[in-house]
Length: 195
Length: 287
Image (tube, rainbow over all chains, first blue to last red):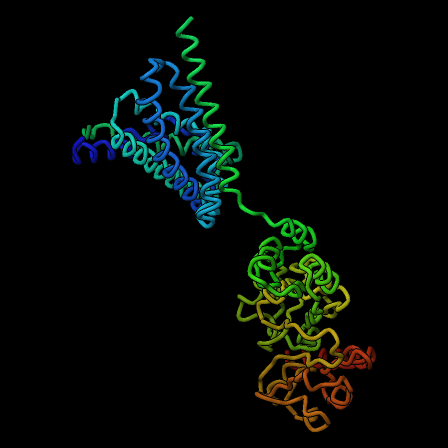
């Protein structure tokens, strides 16, 4: 892939096909850890980290194991296995070698191991038949898009805390309405032809 | 049949591989956890008051273990906690110097009011309105923000001024942070004589606005045989490294604002009644 193709791929993954707001992947952390912007940022960085490494790992497993034995239909199971093991491994590694980074990402890493956004990016990589660099770029960009959505949503929710919300809408209902509005705003990017 | 076997074997093999890798790396990347950390955390009082200088009990515990922090920094746990930490760490317990909070104001009903405050029952809110209801800019409003901040029930409001029960006080400093007027300070638990005023106003002015505040008359300075008490900026202060609790200054103080635990706490009951009556008269006169 050329650099301009990679750039288009990355921009597309961040804005046009935003994982959370357009593809509706990773909704659980989107609603769960979006109450404060700093936790949202922490989660976002964990996702970027995990999705980047998971894209590479799943690409290698897909190319060298699943394709060789001609069992690509097993990719969902295989990818879940790879991602779960990878997250565990990364967590152990960080705990030992980069305790400060582990402290910052630590509590979010286990949450990522079974996240559909991570599995989603792995499956999309194989569906779109990206090469290794393309997969990693797509994974990282998708995660940046996820972080962007999470951060936007968290900052809106922080403001919502102080607004006068009708009793029936307090808490999650108004958060869901907000999420829908942000999602509609991102739909506006669909006219952008970058791919 | 062969297809199923390939799938099972491949995925099973992958699982086995990952399992082995994880098992090996868990040994390889094992972080040596000191079991003393858990013991230390358990021995902490768990108030998370941050008086030790670390933001929370568990952080202090790890600081003791990893950074060689002193074991006697916990004012809440006091001697017993320091001894427990010492036992866990295998070092001698240096006893922490027990401190107690001191409300350095005895004004209350004896301090003249600028206006009658009827707002939110909170000193911070009161301080926002024209610097508070007292004429004195260094006075206790007696609205109990410190008492609400105290987790040990050591502060009560008596005659519109906060009073610390030094037996209950753990020296956690939460009240110091809560007080908007910076009136509360830590003082040695053993100290019987304490200056209960922080006003640096000149004597003449202070006499008009408070019945009890320090006017800087230097009477205590003269009477002290140990060179422990000095007046600076119209305010007496005690150097506790020299003070031996003799109580001469408390006895001699014409304003009776030096409290002496051996003698009595503050002015005598009948004294205060008299003064209160006086202050009432004063206020009527002004109105």
